[in-house]
Amino acid sequence: MVCNWVLKKSFENQDLVKQYLSTGWAKRVENTCAGGKHVTFYCREHGKKCSAKCKLLFCSDSFQVEYYENEDFNHIQTDPKVLSAVLKEFIKELEIVGVSKPRQILAAIREKGMKEPPKSALSNYLARMRKQKCKSHIKLSDFSLWCIEHSAMPTDIDLPFVIAHDSEITENGIDYFHAVVSTRRLLKFIEHSSSIHIDSTYKLN
Image (tube, rainbow, N blue to C red; front, side):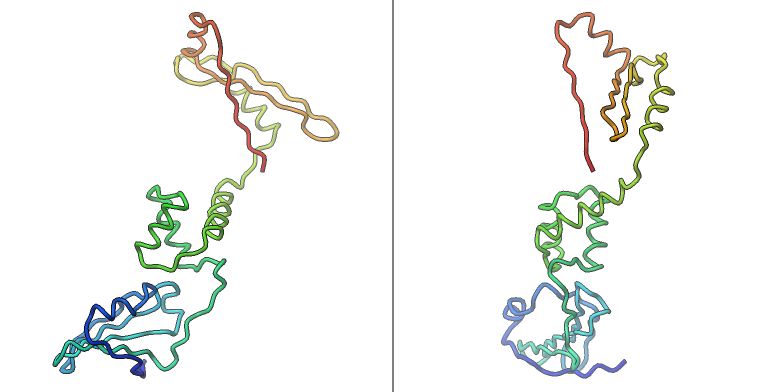
């Protein structure tokens, strides 16, 4: 497909070009001809879906650099609160390598040269993404059955098992449920302890 380029600006040197060209561009093609070196860029955020392209011509007979845009230059306009598909994919890649905190992700986005989303939009996306990973719910009856199946004392002193469990279900729903899990080694420590620390965790969603 032939691209018609329109000269938009000329620069005296490369340093001025770097100050002008935003970080929202990624290099696509680089070639050299008699007039100089041509470097074509595409939209980093939306990729080939965005029709906007730009090109730099590093003139061979001087230090001058010319900036061109294609005729149908028109960036895809998106709601700043909505993360692009490219950005979402990048965030998933970061999650895989252990980069999961919003500040770390925003720093990686800046380093990559991508458009930085609002922190609130990023936090909302991370919450939705993690909720999808944990969208399955366990029934209380299944949990009670699991407790029964894991209530036998194991031979391995470091293998956890259910010491006791209890629950009460009324017409209005679940009043409470309790489960105590420990290991034989931890229980043995009680013989030499004057106090016991009990910890519990719950999450409502």
